[in-house]
Image: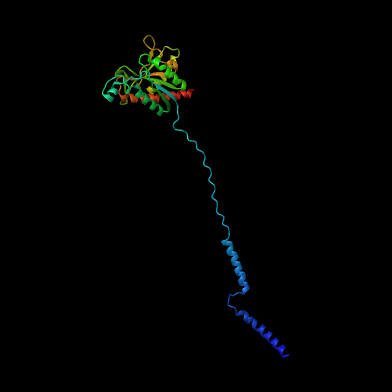
Length: 279
C-alpha cells in the first residue's frame, strides 16, 4: 500500500513539474528533431543553388554575308596592232637632243620609240595592244613587211591596225599650237588601188574626227594615193581597219610628238569602243 502511494505521488509530482520542465528550454530553441528537419531543408535549398546546371546564353549565329561581285577596273575595250614599215624613220630634234647629231634615220631614236609610247597610251585607255617590230629593207618595204603582218593577223583579230610613219615634210606643215601647247600634226594615207579602200577611208575619217574634237587642227587632210610611182595599197587591202598614220614630220620635237601620241590613243580608244557597241 505504501509502495503504491509512492508511485502515485511520483506520478503526480511529474505531471506537476512537466510544464515547468518544458519552459526551461532557451527561448527560440527547438527540439532536436526540429533541428534535423531545418538542417535538411537548408541542404536541399543550398543544393538547388550550387548544383543547378547553368545553361549559357547562345549567341545568335551571324547571318552569312552576301556575296559581292567586284567588277574589274581594267576592262579591255578592244585590240590594236602597231607596226612600222619604215623602221628607221627619225626626227631631227629628237636625234639632236639624244646625241647631238641631226638625222632623219636612226637605229634606236626612231619611229618605234613613239610606237612604244603609243602602245602605253592605248593600254592606259583600255586597248590591248601588240607591237610588231620587224626590220625590213627600205626598198620594197611594203611587200617585205606584208607576210609578217599577215601572220600576226592570223593569230589574233584586231579592231585597229596602225602602220606608224614619220612624214618627210617640214615643221611648218606638221605643227599646230593649241591652248598654249604645240602638237605634231597627223596625216592619214589611203591607198586607193584595191576594191575596199573606202572602208579604210571611213575608218580614218572616224579617227580624224575624234582627234579634232580633242585638239582642233591636229590632223591634216587625208592623203589619197594611187597611180605610178606609189605603192597604191600600202597593205590596207588586208583589213579595213588598217591605217597608215604619219605622226608629225622631220622637224617635230619629242614634246610635240608625245602630246599628239596621247591624243591619238584617246581618240583611237573612242573609235574602237564605239565600233564594238555598234557590232
